[in-house]
Amino acid sequence: MPATAAEGPQSLFEIRGDTAYFTFNRPEVRNCLSMQLSDELVDACEQARLAREVKYMVLTGAGDTFCAGDDLKEMASGAWGNASDYFERVRYYQHMAYSLEELSKVTIAAVDGFAVGGGLEVTMACDFVIATDRARWGMPEVDTGITPGWGGTTRLTRIIGRRRAKEINMIGALHPARRAVELNLWNRVVPTGQLTHEVDRLLEVLRTKNQQTLRQLKYIINHGIEADLYTAQGFEALSAGFSAALNGWWQVEDHDQHAGLEGFSDKTGLWQQRRPAAIDFWVD
Image (cartoon, rainbow, N blue to C red; front, top):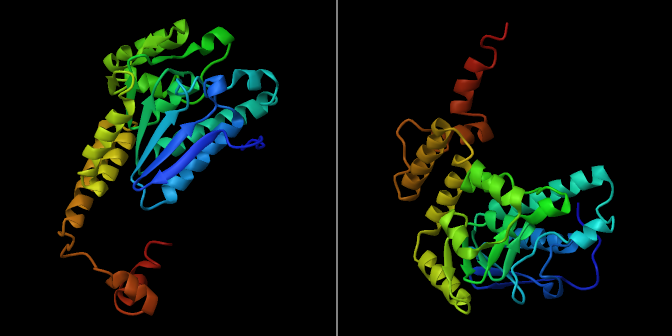
């Protein structure tokens, strides 16, 4: 549900080498997520997804704020429409969060200042979160009579548990960065002024890794947490087999090694052997 573009972009996006950088660029309103800015984040995720050279994506905010959440003035103006339009807008924002969360690139939120409401929800969709010691976070929607729509009650509960998620949402306090680390919501807090340096340090370490292995780890962790243990371990087993194939142990004695597909293309070999035996079996 893209918005109508205003004059000029509200974000900065660039690809430098193997890393895409997205900056919320509305410092005059603490980088609030307007409809347009949300569209631009979705577009940036798609550009990063399609860029094969990109392995990482870093999200930052201009000025001294990461993102102060949805643009409540825009919402109050009626720009979101009626209740049905509102429903579709929230679904679109959920799509935005999934676009970020499901990127095969490693995503890093570099948080300075406020990350509240939708801004906090953005961090929850990222793989790593590094914040300055002056950063503040929370879900204050309760005091405007609205509820979170794309992670504040769902991802948050999965990360910090039901009891703490109720506390964060029902009270609406703004918490210090250290508390987010204690609750396993963010990874690390650094002194103000060292945020970029710490992000670069993390990128240096990640660049030493096998990139395919990083992609697999992200996939199985993200999907496994939403499944029962039995299903999640199925993801682990399949990933292990995939890793073995990538390491050179791909030949399996009783596998066709392309012969099945070749037979289909040529209508010879295994295709002629298998299809007549199966096509009418138990169809009475």
